[in-house]
Figure 1 (tube, rainbow, N blue to C red):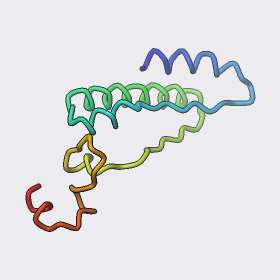
Figure 2 (figure 1 turned 45 degrees about the vertical axis):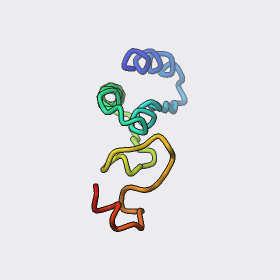
Figure 3 (figure 1 turned 30 degrees about the vertical axis):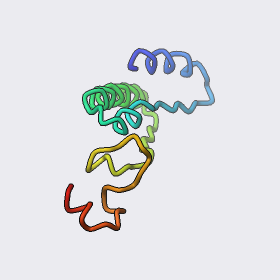
Figure 4 (figure 1 turned 30 degrees about the horizontal axis):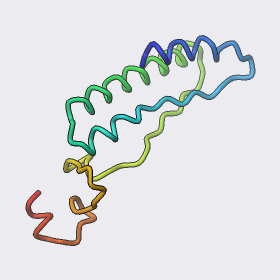
Length: 101
């Protein structure tokens, strides 16, 4: 991912009017739904490296950097599932199910 961001910055920097670059890793969400935490963590680290590269690049040029985060899931705290249910986490109304976490 860092190679892609580096290449994008080289091309986009040619625009004298400035530019907007959005970088994301859609696989982090998919991996957490499957409870494949090893791959989710790896992709998170790769995304973090890409964000650091972009921040350092912008900082060296005195440019602004805006970093945002997408949505959050119960899997952020409790693990996920691949069935699309919301039966874990704080949104769960079943006290017995919450107690099993």
